[in-house]
Length: 124
Image (cartoon, rainbow, N blue to C red; front, side, top):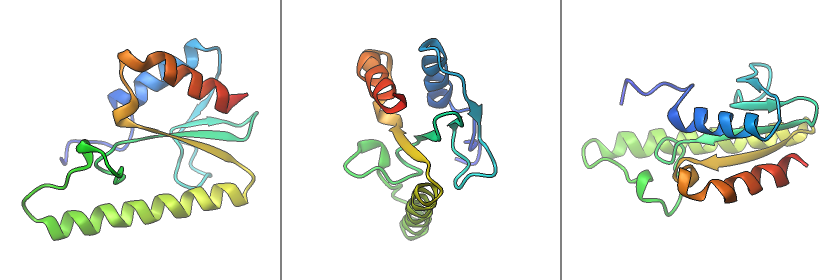
């Protein structure tokens, strides 16, 4: 798990390519915004987060299952991540930004049309 980085995951790159193919241009990981969003659309004051189900505690998702060893540590770590995410979303709203969270489990080539529609609806 230590080899998993916070940026440029396969899912994030998939979403970037999809958004770019839809004709939208964006900035990556803008440091002056809460949570350093994955895709930033300054023109629209909108951001997209591409969240891993495990690391961000996606409820009712099989990918968010905690490891059997050292459960207390992992539960505490994931809870902190969820709290931090909520704080970041709240802070973004206070600054006048809108956000969209795309979960890892929703990113695959089978449901690309629904993902496109979700992104297009958000960015319009």
